[in-house]
Image (cartoon, rainbow, N blue to C red; front, side, top):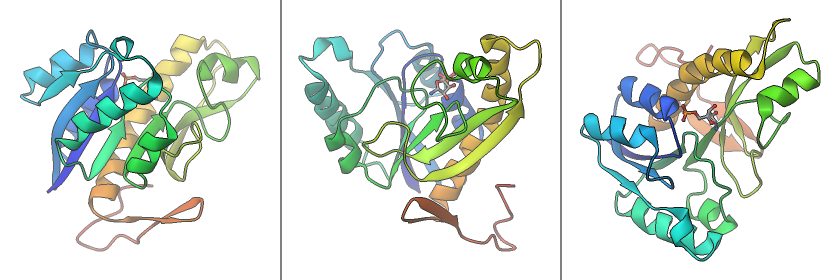
Length: 208
Ligand code: GRF
């Protein structure tokens, strides 16, 4: 069994998709948040998952918060830490501590549109295709080896909200598959690339 700690800041729909995927050999050890009011915490509790919130406002600076979060995460002896809508910039110390076992989901086709407001920015640029990316997180924001991406069309009458909803549905598809691949030991980081071991008859292709 691989222990997974999931970090959220709000709704937690990606966290729910991960839990509901029932990934073989994955133990969702805890769901943690920087936001005590994160709706996803109540949902995780209702599923019997350990939860905790550390309010970042209670800490003097980013480094102190990240250290407290690391201590909390490490009580669960994680094999993998998953950022599922965790809306905090992480310190290099945090990223180094979980190097190669820290995965993030980002609502754009990276390397385009790092940071916030990705859907409005894609509309403003006239993109015809948008999407989402699952990647290993490194100290550089939204810039680590890419594990999986999914593309969706941008429609003429899209608003940021309608585009976000279409992208979110794709997020819910690729995130659990990427985590399943990590848990199964199928992902290998080679420089900036992630090489996915060929599926065998026992582990059919999870990523298209
Ligand atoms: C998702 O779009 C994720 O890609 C982004 O924040 C959003 C979180 O949504 N980082 P949820 O909390 O998983 O519903």
